[in-house]
View 1 (spheres, one colour):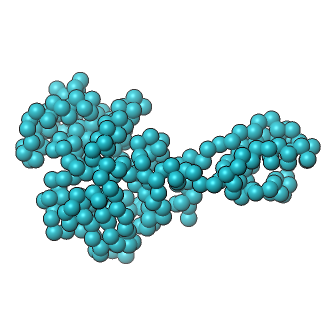
View 2: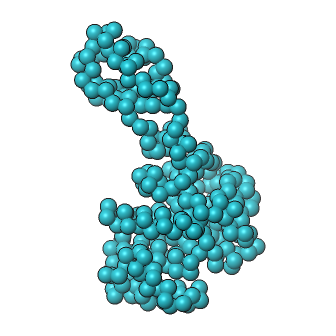
Length: 298
């Protein structure tokens, strides 16, 4: 395993940031780490990169213990923190040269990383002159510079425009072919586009840990229906196999069924039996955002 987390707990005073967290990640996996603000994501990432120590439990990264083999962990990990700390007065190449010296890697890697992260047009500028999106690219280039086995990325796509998102998504996905990638983000589309697996944390505890395709294949479906006139909630609740229902707008309802069968014929029959017409009837995929809300609601 590239990352093994066993019974990790961490408190800040009376506040428990992590509560007996355990999971493992195999080499080559790209894992999305999701949770609301304050759920413990950044705290765990800082523990895995040796910036913080856990109060209890153990963590092994690329075969090295984060408590007793910190240098080995740091050599094998590329880390992009949430608040990307950069020397704003240095030029892009100058900053990467500084980091190349720290990691004792060939200077030829600098040009490779500049090209890989799309920094060529901005590489002659001082970091302080760059947009937030390009600063993120500098941070990512620095994280990849020493060719680490494990990439830990905390909100890596912050500040990127839609075109930059596509480019950086491609960089991360390509890196995942021969590295382990553990990333946190609030952008669910990024997780669906990049990740193989999702771990969701809420109030310091893991609430789900599943392959993305399994997580999204829950035997449940959402149907949006618009009737030709308003109907009472009590009548809607009598539709067979209905798990939840929401009157989203005027005569439009969002119906959630606990079935993997197509329930649109059932809704159509309900409308017919009650003298209603269906103006629209759409089956909606249950996306990751909906699953996230369910897993993390109070």
